[in-house]
Length: 286
Ligand code: NAI
Image 1: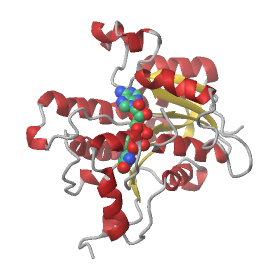
Image 2: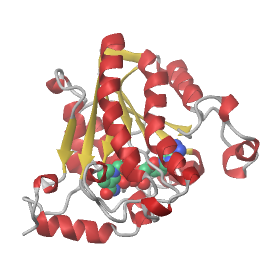
Image 3: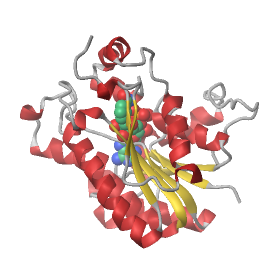
Image 4: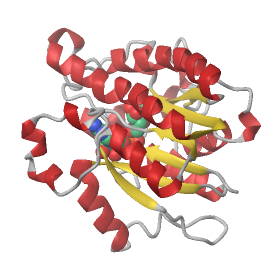
């Protein structure tokens, strides 16, 4: 049997989630995705209308297929956690079963189990504010959407993952070096995500035999990154200063994700892998 993957955080064909899903599909995996509820309608209708057909092309001539799209809001673990204003919000009312627990239950009911779990989502409502100007609410929201969401996904999905399975997330260099502009507590959220990668590798490794890694990716002009506001500067900085002076492609991260998700990486867990043309290793820009 081929492997089955659930990728949380795909809502268009521009981000890392799409590229990871596509690389896993090219390697023979069956693909399920979790799409943020407010983005679900537009994503599904764009898929249906063929808007992504060009980026669905696989190098073997086939078309990348998504077996099922699940609505997901990873800041809510169970139905009891959903406040009234969200329940009654018209962008949410049209979908159901989108808390993390319910989403895992739906995947189990539809497919039984998965082998690969990918967390490719983040949200920091105050990302454009320096840390010193970030409110407690904004900081905690960044940690909730960008970090605890991963703990929650693993908590509910690990029990339906086959032993030998693999899980990974996406992080960013701002966790360990000063990147002015990556604010709102997002640098803190990524630092926590990296620390959690090690602790979770231990906990789910021992309990379920599942590996947990994170990819520290270089800058990509995704929808989320454009919202931060300085993505073009980041890309230019990297192209000018990284050991490899080329622009990062989403596929570069997709292929590393496919490797980490495969038996080729069967002894790799608790690791942070840089996929950034080496920019993290520079101390003095020249
Ligand atoms: P993206 O916009 O393609 O992906 C982010 C996704 O998260 C979107 O689909 C959004 O709908 C979803 N999302 C937000 N809040 C959610 C929630 N509560 N529940 C479910 N889904 C939710 O952007 P990108 O850049 O591909 O982001 C993927 C990951 O890569 C993120 O963890 C990001 O921090 C990380 N990353 C991005 C870099 C970049 O330069 N683009 C660099 C390094 C890491």
